Image 1 (cartoon, rainbow, N blue to C red):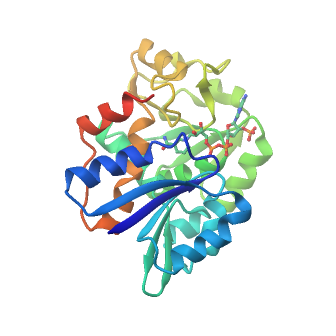
Image 2: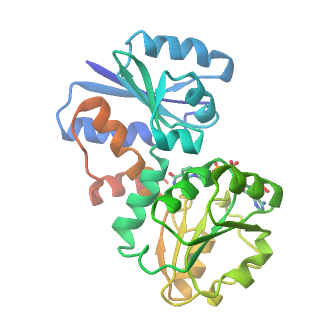
Length: 273
Ligand code: NAP
């Protein structure tokens, strides 16, 4: 039986076992996918188990994404650019690491806001934490001309922009009112929106009517930012799709079948939020 995993600390909240379990059943695969709580001090020992062939691979979440990137034996180019990995595959020559967050982000927008990347002038990214890295690399891969990266801590945004290169212009969140006119896309990758928190001073009515607003926070599914965007008549894309789409490449690598993000799967996960 092929065994896969998701590791994190904590891990009990993860929806990944439900997603992969659904696909394992749907495709009649002799496999398993289990959530394993691995504390930082135990990560080296766990990676040794993976290297020994106990698992076909697995997913990695907070706080291990940077550490597994360093511990893996080889990495794909995008993981190298992002500096973090969320998916591991056990191969004959060792552990291969890649990053599917950027694929999940793009797959979600492509499925739910087709054409979002056509004729863009500039986009606005809110937040400069771990997930912002993958999202900035994803946006750069679609040749977005200018990215305005706004963050509470401007220094962190500047460091990220410096690391990644290209036209990323940084500022504080209050600069939204200056950069909103003409923006084709707004991405929230701060944790604002979780647990009932909401932005202050982000006026979405300043955006053009054609703009798309997407949030990577998916609990609640409709964050206050998305609710405000919907009220302003803008296209919205929630963060659950990113979670579902980022799971596809890992499943395909471990079990040899490319699974689909179907409405049925979405309903299954939505019911747990
Ligand atoms: P992170 O590295 O901890 O970064 C958090 C970001 O939020 C930073 O930019 C931080 O600003 C900002 N922030 C937090 N509290 C704030 C506040 N009160 N006011 C203003 N800014 C605030 O987190 P992450 O890994 O990037 O994840 C961010 C969110 O995305 C989480 O909710 C996570 O669950 C979600 N996520 C979803 C998916 C998905 O598949 N849909 C994937 C990854 C992550 P400072 O730099 O100033 O601290």
